[in-house]
Length: 451
Image 1 (cartoon, one colour):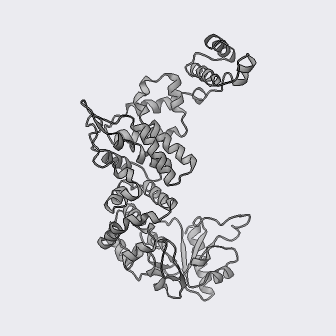
Image 2: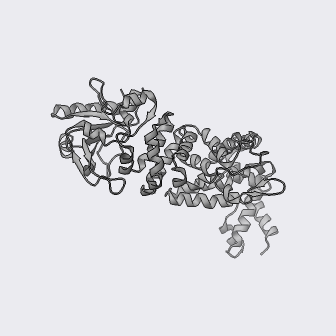
Image 3: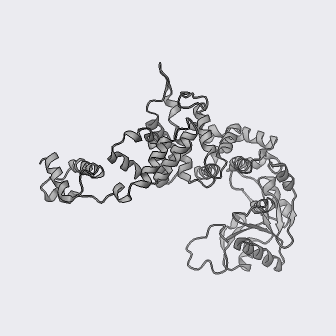
């Protein structure tokens, strides 16, 4: 038994010893029924938040008004300045409740605690997430047919799907993600409700949308997830730039697989589970500049400047979805550099080494590999870049500078914009093996850049 499961079972046992009902609830029950190890465990109980905090003195009331208390393992809170994240043995304990209305499409206007687990289940999202489990007996409480829907491989909203999605619009994206992750079908009335309510997804915060989309991209079923986003009418709402790829033809010589959308979906199909967030988003957005630059020239289809346009579009998407600066920088770098592999055999040593030392170059390499396998299938540039990365000593790719701006000042040069040009030229010569010492570098400067 995992430490998290053991801690959750102990919480259930302790709550019951104090006269309360308590069960495992939600996604952990689903995963246990499927024979999977849950990422985290949730406990549902009829104990109020105050009662939970009295029973477990080491707690964080992160959502007391909604009945949610975090219970970390004994002693784990020492020295903590903020609540720990759920999971990793910190258990979310939620009071049975019934929600009255959701005016903002996310938070209930009023929460009523209840003693009835049936009432609690009926306000949850999907039947497969609506089961409870007694960890002492492994008995499952299933008021909504979740076990049957697991067997039938169906994602079905609990009760009226229009009401479930009106309560929390993010549930529409979660339906897509669960269907993709488990390779299930979305039940027809649930699907119809999503298609109707898709424009209301804009009520959800950008951060929550970003996190759901990122999970879709990194859980190993990105292709299926994004095709479901298209089917449910959510794709043009959350990422119209990706929807715009549909029907944008490409040159059969380089892209025999089909249009830009087909190519991008093939690439997403090859993203492995656990792919980094930045690689996954770089893969999704690498050709986002093609639809607005499509041009049918006399010789072939062209996308002049699609990289530069793509970087601008990707930057707007990252801003809209509120990525961090570091994440944005890497995603934009992937978009900006994905076509450079086509020139790799013609690169000077200085250009090649600067290319190889891009931050997280392994992601650039992997994106190029996936890009090739999703189009013409030719991996010569990938093989060459990988071989060069592994064969060139790191100190040759990132050598210590032979001279600095201080050396130039000491030699009598006036500080200014010219310094960057001089130092860049010296580094080029160093990377190409033409300069190996500070003395030779200064002689080169005096000769090529006279004062």
